[in-house]
Length: 172
Image (cartoon, one colour):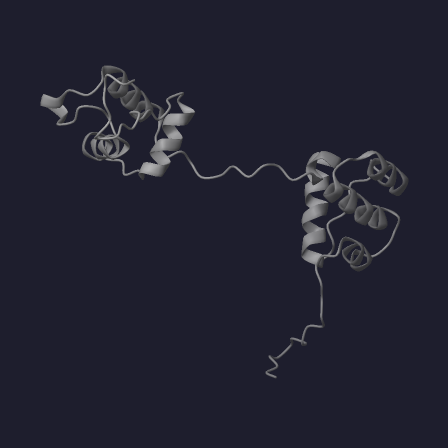
């Protein structure tokens, strides 16, 4: 170990723990845990009640079944938003592949219908619409994703009723 003149080697020093907000006591946290219907929130409230009662963060981590860093994250979330901060929200998910303008373009294209002279097709297929989006809007989208987008816009896939080649049209 290298020693510099005038400096002593540091002992194992841990940062001071983030203090838990004081407007909720241990009893209040346990009472909130009793009435909560969210199992994850109950576990977090019970772990934080240990800290509020004067217990160690290590005890809270053991009760919660997590590490000390996670307990610190819980304390920060609780301090910021109270008991509601301990409920996991829905993840935002990926951003939509098509923005509002591109959806409007797609809607106008479908409502207008295909023209065989202009588009080279008699009716729209997903592959045709995906190709037009690449050419006109510079956005690449898979047929499966395009199908989900169209369904969300209120469109449904229509297909012709199959007919056997030897079927007699007068027999129906």
